[in-house]
Every structure is written in C-alpha cells, then in structure tokens.
Length: 73
Image (cartoon, rainbow, N blue to C red; front, side):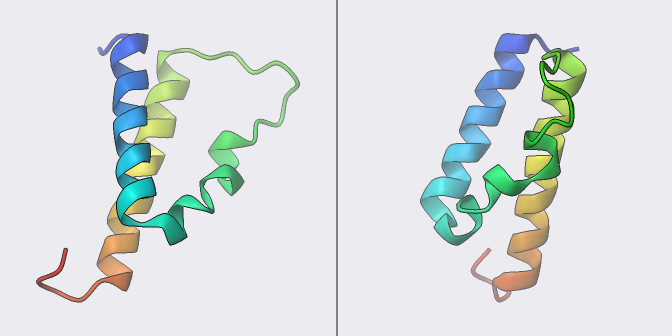
C-alpha cells in the first residue's frame, strides 16, 4: 500500500497534468463529488486519497477518450 505522502504526490502530479494539458477539464475538478464531502470534518486517510486519485485517473482517461481524436492522445 502506498503512503499518504506518495498518494499526495501522485494526486498533485495528475492534477498538474490536467491543469496544463486540459484546462477546460481542470475548471471542473472542484465540482467532483469526491472533493465535496458530505460531512463537516472528513477523515483524510489512504483509502480516501486512493479513491480520489483513482477518480482523477478515470476522469482524465474518459475525457481523453471522448474528446480527443485518435493519434493526438
């Protein structure tokens, strides 16, 4: 299992990739259900960080697949 530090690093890396390459997608990251907790003081742990990272990967993969022509991905 990855450490909290490693997961935070991966989250930062993929977020920066989205920000630099797909700014139109980056604008909507704050609206993701994963980033809007439904409790007042959410616990931050490895599982939550992993879930968030996985959701970012999935969103990026789907966006690239749906919006970019083959050969430019």
